[in-house]
Image (cartoon, rainbow, N blue to C red):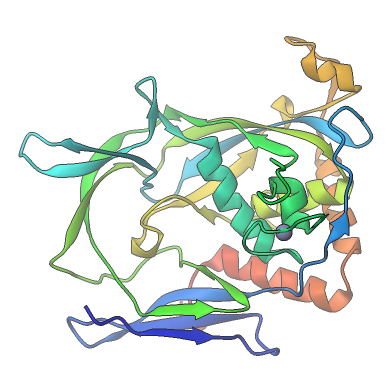
Amino acid sequence: MNREERKESLRSDETYRDVSAIDQRTGRRYWEYYVVKQLGEPKKEKVNIYHDVFVQNTGRLSLTIETKTQIFIGSGTVEITGGDQQYFTFSRVNDRIVIPGSSLKGDIRQYAEALSFSCYDASCEDELCPACRIFGSAPFHFKGKVSFEDAKLLNGKTRIITIPQRWGPRIEYENGRKFYYHSAPLIESRDREWLEVVETGGYFNFNLAFENLEDWELGLLILAMGVAPGREFPLKIGGGKNRGLGLVKLSLELDRSFLFLSPEEMFSSPRPKAIKVKEENLNNWVEKYLEKMSSGTREELDKIIKKFREGKPDGQR
Ligand SMILES: [Zn+2]
């Protein structure tokens, strides 16, 4: 197949760009994805990562994930249906359907990168950008200050479905990141994939532990998960994002989210001394993050969040 390949940049007056493609079968043009422009050059700072020093916020957040469309998180293995059809299975641990923490962390990191002055490839060394400080950097041998547990399916059904395979032109955006719309147009293809998905209306939950996060870092994390009060949006996770899969809404369970009172408490399970996270904490953390930005950047940030929330091309109802 002859795939078109090219490099493009977003202009300085664009915050994001809706990108269309042509359906090879019908010749019709359709909206494929949007590209969010990098907010700016990564702002890197020298950081000392002392895991044994307790200076900032350490605690645990409890979250639920509601599936707004079918979602697919691949296990990497293939099974055979009764009808001899091969399909890709949903990720499991001990026969239980889960979204691996590493997969969640990767998807949420992409939103954090788009909402901050960060690098896009976890490549910082010596000095770390905001995303590398929070989520980690390979060259720095740093795992980050957050760790995501696997999200377990509490309530929901799985089903084996078939969706068309799709290839668009391969365009690289030098200063932006691709995101997919909430729903995908119906593009047919003779090549199809069979997947095991979790149906719409399913619920997962997971815990996220954080260690030594500054207020503004927590603010960025809260924003990137789409749970900041007044700035909520759903996320796209997993596979098949360009074919209408993967839309989820995260919610923070404040009753089960804690800030530890001292470092030792982190290890004094099952009842560490801690205080519950309140909505005013969330507002304060987000405010601390926004304070680091110029008013122009804050405006751009809110435009991006609005785009994440609407998840459709501009001007389309
Ligand atoms: Zn970085």
